[in-house]
Image (tube, rainbow, N blue to C red; front, side):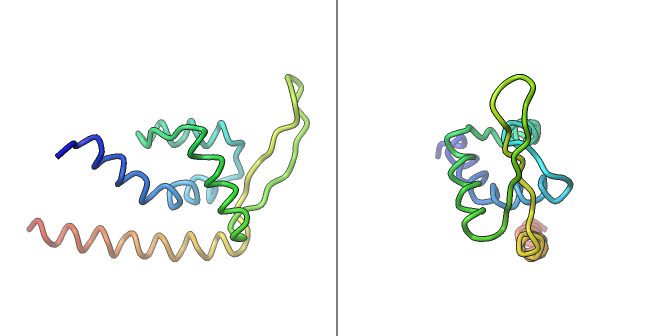
Length: 107
């Protein structure tokens, strides 16, 4: 069993929850999201993040606003919608139930 593949699959499974949690604290620019996820050892690349942000926006979970930048093109800042807040709450509840279930098997 390749443990790196196992870790990658686990990360993939919780990536949406992690993005919602970061945006639940405050709006963020995509590179800020990447940095936050990398600090949490999620090892996400832009090629994974941008399609996921688009899918989450199309699902109605995220919205964005443009802000002019002094050092380049305008920046897109993502934030949770009301529906995104509901999804975050639901996913947090499911995550806790899931981790409790897994933890119960190790005792």
